[in-house]
Image 1 (cartoon, one colour):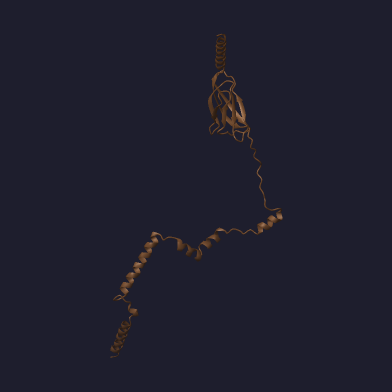
Image 2 (cartoon, one colour):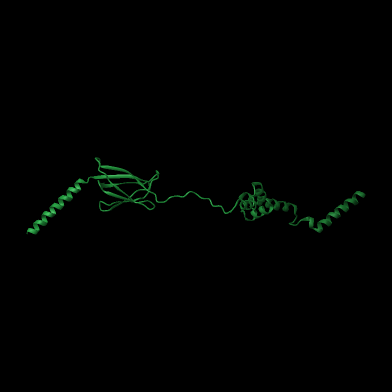
Length: 212
């Protein structure tokens, strides 16, 4: 019975101490922006962990902004690939809001730009430059594109337009109509030997009539 009473008193004391500690740590809205140290560039999607309250995890947005509920005195851990880890302790404040500008050290250092040259000396560069083929100018390219060979090659692969088809059909129809009126009985009289014989006879008769 005595042991039970001691255990009960210890439990009450522990609960009282825990409640007092919780009451002392005020709840605040912790907000801020994460930037790279030495610059004004924001760091996006940083992992944020509250190590003092159940290891709650948060992530900043693409602009480096974050905001979540925490307590005064909480240790907040920031980590991101390529940056040094950072710990921030939320200070006490008379307000219920805490704002901070978090500066993370960039572990990636950019080297100055280097332009490699494939020539060991200026003499080798001059020799390589003199051997370069100069590009054609606009006039030379136009003459090459308008040559008979280039136009014939393009004509073989370029589809005909509606105007070209219409002109071709009209031309063919005109030729057919001319041949129809020039030919008698469906044949060309210039190549008909009988027509030539009749023409010669008419000329001969005309000459004889004039002599009489």
